Amino acid sequence: MSWYYSKNGTQVGPIAEDELSAKIKSGEVSSTDLIWQEGMPDWKPFSQVPAFQGSIAQIPPQISPQGGVPMVQPPAMSAGQYPQIPNYLWQSIVATVLCCMPFGVVGIVFAAKVDGLVARGDLAGAQAASKSAKTWTSVAVGSGLLVTVIYLVIVAFATGGGNS
Image (cartoon, rainbow, N blue to C red):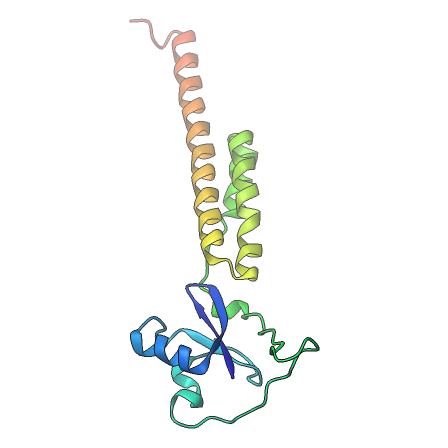
């Protein structure tokens, strides 16, 4: 039987059961890493799968029309199985409207990518997009504050506040 496992948001497989067992024994797959094989309703931590606790139900794999190769498509992981990654969307929108449009728009673009990447299982990409959204939003707010301070200094000097 072929197995699939998920490590750091990346789906790996199919691999043979003995190969998965070797990865488990070596520590490459931890007890909290999710595994799945055809016949299971959803992904589970390997420590909760009976096949790795001494008993396994043998279900024959479906054979492809090309012959001999199992045709298996594992189910997508549900959103609750992924860590929550902030998208900074509302912060980017506020920064765009109130501060600095060019930088805020870049923040919105990155923020809009986060949830889609999480849904596809690309956690590394989602974390990178989240970090970029946060960075560009901070740049927008910082540049908006800098422009405001410069404006206030100019107004203060122009109205006589700088004359001694």
